[in-house]
Image 1 (tube, protein in one colour):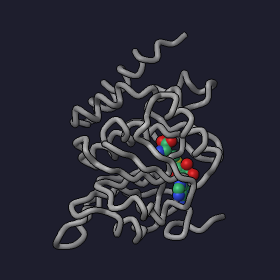
Image 2 (cartoon, protein in one colour):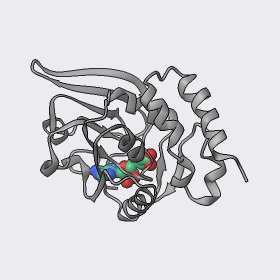
Image 3 (cartoon, helix red, strand yellow):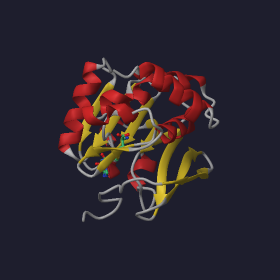
Length: 215
Ligand code: SAH
């Protein structure tokens, strides 16, 4: 049997700290959350490679470095209410649940949402709620959010997500075409929208009213 904790710590040292992720809370969360439990058993021995992995339904669990980069970009201190679009495996949700007060996550594919709910509950993340819906609408009843993370690539900023940010709130989202995107941090300020390009990335499609059309 593989020593999962040892390989997780090694991955964090080499791929997260080694690639300039600095926020100590993000680093601690990456060291703690057992990524191997968010993938099927046959893939568990690959869970601490810094790579995305298939989770079924043609979707993927994001690469750990990308999870760390996006999480750090939200600048969480611990008291925030966070919205995530694209629960997928629930791994990123668990990282957010470690770092914020409440996490609301939306997933459009039922089987993934049900599995994510189960594993998060088993691991004791009770500050998480997952809804099965088109997340490009956000989650207006729970808004405003201090931070919003979209873990699928979008052609543009879905208007409802920007509207559901609190003043000073951050939205991290991959924007681009269907194959390649740039990761953006959008901040809502008194003076309007502040937009920062954090570099290239590659995500599955955000499918919905304010994203890509369904195939
Ligand atoms: N954070 C996840 C990433 C999963 S991949 C993880 O690390 O496991 C992106 C996810 O976004 C997929 O599960 C996909 O079904 C979901 N998704 C795509 N469009 C969506 C939408 N409009 N609303 C909610 N979820 C969406």
